[in-house]
Every structure is written in C-alpha cells, then in structure tokens.
Length: 468
Ligand code: NAD
Image: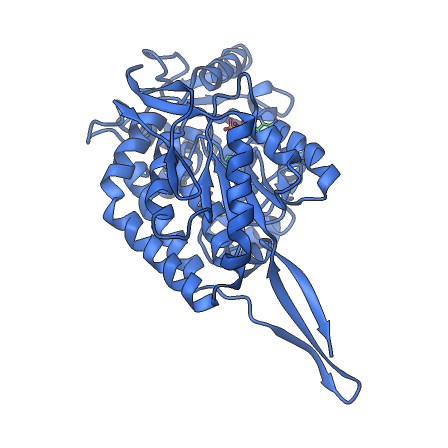
C-alpha cells in the first residue's frame, strides 16, 4: 500500500484525511493520497511565497544545474515512477505507456534546463540604452489532469523553476501518487518551499478553484478540460493572474485522395489511439476521401485488431483501460449513440471493468455526438467526404483548435491545406507528435498561451524594460 504525504516547505506532511487511489485495470486499491484543506493550501502558498525572493535571486547557472540534477533524479527513479503511473493511471508499462512517459518527462526537463531568456538590447544609441528583461513572477500554481500525470507535471514545474519562480502543484484526484513521489524526490534537491504539492479529492474543498483565486499566486498553468479551464480564467480575473491554459481538443485528420491506405494505417491508428485516445492532441475525427475510404477503413481495422489490450502491469499490454468511470461512461454514451447512426467496423462493446476495446465507427458526419464532442477515449469516428473544401470546413467547424493533420503523398498539397486548418499544431502524415523545442498550444477555445521552447518559457515571466 502506498500512502504518500504532501511536500510543503521541504517537509513531508500528512493530512487529517486521505482519499483512495485505485488501479483502473483491476479496481485494486493502490494507495491513499492526502486530502489537503484550505489551510494546508495556504501553508503551501506561504512557503512558496517566502522561498521566492532567494530563489529568484539565485544565479541562473545555479538554477540551471539544479534543473539538470532533476533530470538525473527522474532517470534514477524511472522504474518506480513508471510503475506508479501504470498502477494509478492504467496505461501499460510498455508501448507509448508509462516508461515512455517517464522518458518524455526527462527529455522535456533536459531541454528546459538548457533554455535561456537572454536580455535583449532594444536600443543602443545617443538617445538611450533600452534593455528588455524577463523577470520571474512569484508563486506559480500548477493544476494537472490524469492522462499524463507525470509528464504534464514536469512540463509545468521545470520552466517555472528554471525562470526563478516557486511552485505549488496540484495533480488530478485520479492520479496523485506519481506526482507526490516526483515532488518529494525533486524538492529534496531544492531549497525548502521552492516546490510544494497539495492533493485533494475535489469534494468538500476544490483546491484548483482556491488556487485560481488565491491572492498570493501570480500565475496558473492549467492542463485539463475546456469547462474547467474557463472556470480557472473566471476565478483568476480578480487578481489578474498570468494564465497558460492547455485545454481540450477535438482534432481532425484529413486524408487526401492520393494517400496510400496501407502505408498510413499504423500512424493513423496511433495518432488517434495513443494513451487509449486519452490524449489532448490525439486525432479525434478522421475525414477520408470517398475514393479510398473503404481501403483506409480496412487497413485501420487490420492494424487495430492486433493491438494487445490488457492490464497495464502486464509487459505484453500495449493499451490499457479507460482511466476512470466518468470518462468510461462518457465514451460509452458517445459510442452507443454513434452505433445508431453509423457502422461499427471494430469494437463498440465495452469489456470488463473499465476496459473498452479500440473502436472504429464509419458512416458518421458533423452533427453526430461522437464527431462533435471530445470522446477522450479509444473510439474514432470516420467521416467520408467527396469535396476537400467541405472536409476542411467540417474540420474547422468546431470551437476547439488544438491540433490537426493532413495525410497525402504530396507534401506541398498537404502543407497548403494544413495552413488553412484552425489549430495550434498541424502535422503531415502523422498526428500528435510533440517535441520540447516546438511551442504547443491551442487556438480558439482550446486554450491560451503555449508551452515548450523559448516561447513557453517566457510565459513564466513578466517583461521589464529598463530605460537608461
Ligand atoms: P479536468 O478539467 O476535469 O481536471 C483538470 C484539473 O483541474 C484536475 O487537477 C482537477 O482537480 C482540477 N479542477 C477541478 N475543478 C477545478 C476548478 N474549479 N478550478 C481549477 N481546477 C479545477 O480535466 P481532466 O478530465 O483531468 O483531463 C482531461 C481533459 O484535459 C481533456 O479535455 C483533455 O483534452 C485535456 N487535456 C489537454 C491538454 C493540453 O495540453 N491541451 C493535455 C492533456 C489533457
């Protein structure tokens, strides 16, 4: 049994009450996480606030070498962290699962450690010397979701620390354990109060809402659903917090008539089904030209039916269960509705517990719930089109705009169409591939701001211009 504690001001702290964390593959109890009260949150914010002046004044090279040390510590503890992720999140150890997630966390941390935001000279002449500086903000509040609990935590925490901010992080109630352990390990490298964590079950107390309105938190970096992101923005208005909001998506892929169905099937599948579809920038709607529609469907089914689905702790599993009951119920509702409107090519019937097989449903169109709503699970709607302009209009018709993709043998034609997709990232012949040097964020209602790269790092700072 894993009963973890909070880290506040460099010390391990228990809470009066705890909540259960269960393995979505088996329903077994994995451990307990502390149920922090408002007072506990205030203590964490006060510790971060007190630690800020010294941390902000720490020489940049020192912060950089501590960030490099964090990368090593993640590596030294990678197997323990991967097992924790698998047991609380459900994703398999293998494939693009928990070991891959820990590796990704390390890769992002390593890249962030090497980034800098140099002083810019804006003017240097007889009329003046003007320099632009990037100053840390103060206490950053990080709120994370349950799909990539560790990697997203690292995406939030590392750039905040790198730029001289202190942090209070709050993971999802569904997946608090790996983040609690990571913060315990990382905070031991840092001065007390620089990195703190609170967890709660979102029942009596909603820590995320309290953080969004907290007068001593200067920025919220939030990854989660559109509805919650909007609440964060409302609650943050009073204190004019800086915000990075990475919210939901409903990414479209458009397959052009010249694509080779057999050659793209595997990448189409993983573009949609990575992490069992529980990925913000997964392909969630697939538009296929009528001339190759059936061939693409056949190739997808042929690939998908051989992907091993099972208990995440089984080394042979490549996909696991849906992470939680609410998500499972939403997926089932959308698939049940789609079954009445289209043709089920594969899957469609829930398995044991939270298992849901990879599901492909053709014959759908915009207006059907599985197309219009973010399913965030292993079910892909396939839409047949005859006119590419109509496919583009349908792809752009929704209010979200995280990612998109175009599939074609003609890269020029694909790039031309990609440029007209309304989304923050667009891929040719793949979907969802993100990297630490490429700013990532959504347009329209998928969010505000970006993460990664210098542009992402800059979001943890305010600009100060010095006129001399
Ligand atoms: P969620 O919005 O339900 O929860 C996210 C976090 O917000 C959790 O930690 C939760 O406890 C907290 N929270 C709950 N109420 C809050 C409130 N009132 N104020 C502040 N915080 C509050 O999201 P989820 O179900 O955990 O994650 C799935 C969603 O996240 C999907 O829509 C997915 O597309 C999105 N997502 C986006 C990205 C991205 O980078 N854009 C990445 C991963 C997931």
